[in-house]
Length: 135
Image (tube, rainbow, N blue to C red; front, side, top):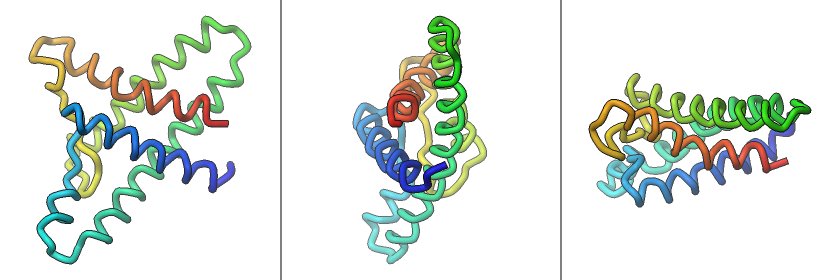
């Protein structure tokens, strides 16, 4: 596994998460620390990078397995399942209240029973696209 490529994918994932935060899908708890001027801004950004690096390693390993599938329909189904699991990993970071990690807004699309599932899928899909196409 090439660490430079994984780190670059982590930076692209953070950029995508920032764009999703503009839509209200994700909140970054480190932004409040950074804007308060408490002096912990650099450390919080480094902790966010560490959390996203773990997420990008997980996504890179899933994408490597999806790219090894020869049948296109199975690869498409596994890409959607992988994107759901990337969104679920972000939701797990929010539920466990991991500090400095991006917190997913499970009620982003509404309050019906399928909204959290669809939110995890729609947040995880562009991230999984970065990992699948990124090679």
